[in-house]
Image 1: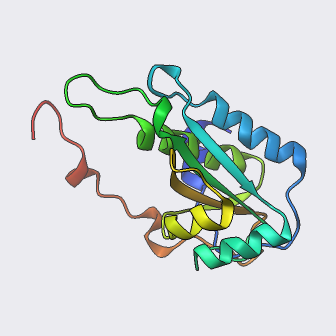
Image 2 (image 1 turned 45 degrees about the horizontal axis):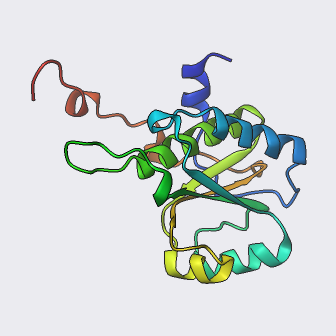
Image 3 (image 1 turned 60 degrees about the vertical axis):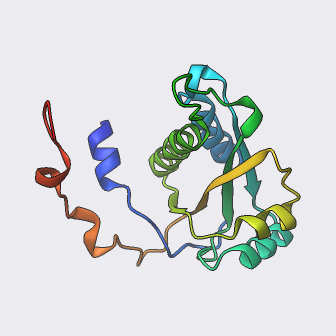
Length: 171
């Protein structure tokens, strides 16, 4: 499948089968994360795989947007390992974690696994429930699973605003 087809076909899945994701597929998704570019290739990403029953119950304390997925991955970054832009001190961590999440989401879709990128979670509860150290910053929650047969894209999935979002040479 070519990239534009893959990217165009993928949609946020909010209705999952209860089947667990096979470990070899989880490993492929994590490999896609490893291959993602990061600032100076410092690889500050830290990924928490949440796929055991007790951990999934903890996740439900942290976010209502779990969609009863059989697996989730919390993508974070280590604040101590980010590239820092010398001009203004901006760190690459959020960008790095976002690129990693995108790679994971697309790899999952290629494997027949649906996902939804969730930002609606309580970081303090995540820290407490999963014992996340202070130097590790949660960015994205990727809920994953095999889509139910009735899973369909949101109606806005094919609405694009290119005429309002793309500019050449000046704003």
